[in-house]
Length: 298
Ligand SMILES: NC(=O)c1ccc[n+]([C@@H]2O[C@H](COP(=O)([O-])OP(=O)(O)OC[C@H]3O[C@@H](n4cnc5c(N)ncnc54)[C@H](OP(=O)(O)O)[C@@H]3O)[C@@H](O)[C@H]2O)c1
Image (tube, rainbow, N blue to C red; front, side, top):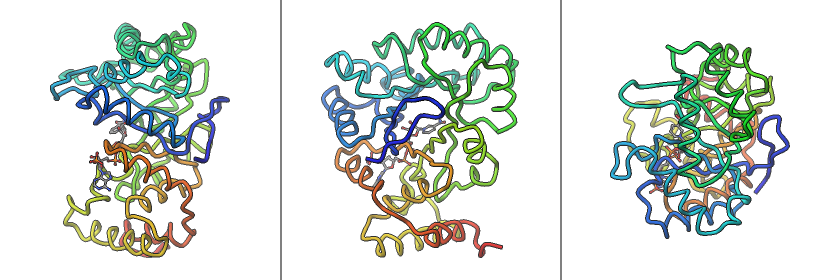
């Protein structure tokens, strides 16, 4: 797996990351196998969040608990991964990025994950009620305490990201928008360009649109049909699967995007890893952009 750096840090990560949103229902054995398979394929950044598991039997914190159990079975495993979590979503409020809440949320995540630190702590969604100065104070203190090596944001607008950054002592090392062949707005709303400007890593969440791009189900619009047709043609051209082409599309953007895959199937983790070797041409990339736009590039 091709490696890249996490933002402006010296931490190396695989060009594809593994996400734990759908992970909380795994048995311990299954969870262990998924994490080991990802790591074995060079997928070294593991992205989770305290909210993952909420609404399922595992409940709030469920994915972190499971991952923590995996980590506790093999003390050497923690050092083999770059561990990222998120906090700040707390239904039904729905968000809380106050100083006290975020500091406690990080402590609780560390307890569940059974580790002393995370490599990356991300505010999950922007809380419109808490001043950016206060949110930044929390992130600054997390880094100062050593409990979070670096900090980042997810689902922030560029203006929100800049407002937060203005009060931080260290650069935000990551942004995390939804980005896929079916959700291309980060290419035009400035998110990916902000990452290029600052050196932050742009993680793409739901790079297969939550599975729609793999199954071909879940969209009956003309746009969806155009994107499917284009991905299928490119899959034939490159002797790849449609999912691999969809992942390769996100990685072709100049901002050096790191897609976070969410499959819970071992064989699909391996299949996704092979995507890093697929080289889409510039024309291939623009074919997917034009399928999304429904028009040629101007
Ligand atoms: N920051 C945020 O707000 C936010 C929001 C959402 C997600 N995320 C992050 O992004 C990660 C990935 O999100 P995601 O899970 O939506 O990613 P995704 O990779 O777009 O979708 C994963 C889904 O696609 C299905 N799938 C994959 N390959 C398939 C195939 N070949 N055939 C049929 N189904 C297939 C998977 O089912 P199988 O398990 O059966 O393969 C799974 O249900 C999350 O784990 C999380 O870390 C962040």
